[in-house]
Amino acid sequence: MVKEIMANSLPTGPKGIRFLFGEFVHYDYFFGYIGTLLHAESGIQHIHIMENEFWGKMLFINNCLQFTERDEFIYHEALVHIPVQASPKGKIKKVLICGGGDFGASRELLKYPEIEEVIIVDIDPDVPKLIKKYFPSLLPENPKDPRLKLITADAYEMVKKFTREKKNFDLIIIDTTDPDVSVEGGKTQELSHALFAEEFHRMLLEMSPEGIVVQQCGTPFTMKDILKGTYQIFKKVYPENEIYCYRADVPSFGGDNAYLMRFPFEDPKTPKWEELENTLYYNHEVHRASFGLPKFWKEVLE
Image 1: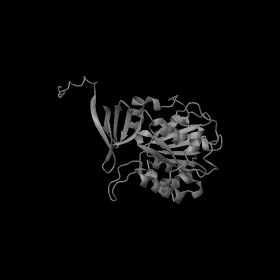
Image 2: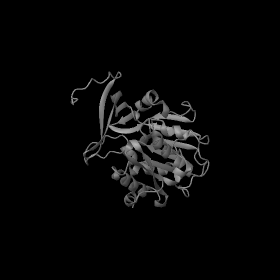
Image 3: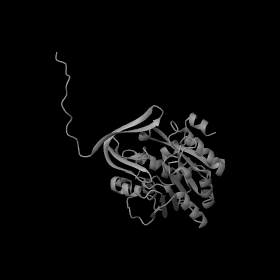
Image 4: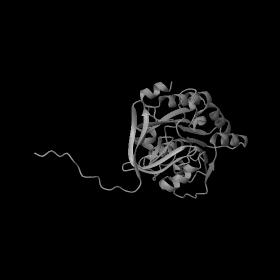
């Protein structure tokens, strides 16, 4: 018997830089991705776009995965359709998205003809440009839909302005990177950090006292402090009986993603609108199930 020792060379690969990208999830624990680097820049945020054989194109901001082509629809459909469908039929007319420059949330909102205005306020001018180039599937069916407006600005400052102008929204979606969890005293590097603060939510309440507010809160299995801290902020600002948590399993995130919602109406667990046909994740059965939380989540929400 002859032992096989040497091997033939790998076939010549495609053009582009092939690399291993490691995303640290926790101590001694990281996700690794092998793919082709499509874009890298260090502007106001560090942005990397890579293409992986399984996940498709992937967007990383500040070394953290934001979404993949393969499963982004789960995150965005849960973020949008649960608050919309939970609200009284036809209630949602005007929507503000803080962050959301990837267009995924606006794509889902504009599936409703009843919605009259969707404003995206994203601080990074490069994100929308890169989405249009590398992730066209995240764009609305009609990218030039007149109901959609993109503003490049700091959402914190823009909400200040909207508050002074007495502008009101029926739904406010905070679709951002996770907040900064640097060691105390370190320099805050996440641009979204201020959007998780009590001061920001007090402005939202003043601007839209009867509005629904939804904020993504990371994956609690490895980011318990984000859900716990955001929940404490919600309890300081909004009536406790109007605060709800729901979840969606996003495979590329490694577990269930948490969403906190301020909901000033009755029974968010029951959908009130007709079920959409053009979704891949959301339906009324999923809507109801999304509010079922594990016991260890509930212990954090006490």
